Amino acid sequence: MRFIYALALAITLTAVLGLHRSHAVSAEPTDAEVASMVALVCTPDRTWDCRTALAVAWVESRWQPSANSGAGHYGLFQVAGFHIANPDALYDPAYNVAVAYR
Image 1 (tube, helix red, strand yellow):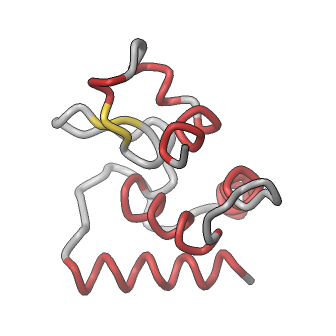
Image 2: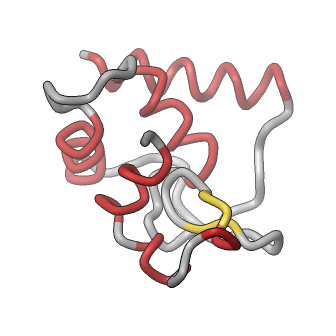
């Protein structure tokens, strides 16, 4: 049920704040993508609100680990790669989450 709230929040933020970006990905995540993101982001050791983190990842990358921007941002949370020794590592979802929320 959490992912439904996160998805609704992400869609609302996108529409209200104009945060949408053009990504060549499907607008509807698959069940596997939803399960993967929930498992990655919503773990007991995380100190953030799970719904908010899922919404941010949806707005930033549509939950696509391979997303990038022309401004040098990479992965799920569109982390800026200029302060990372190997920006390509940001395409690894686990690493991207760890960097985004450390």
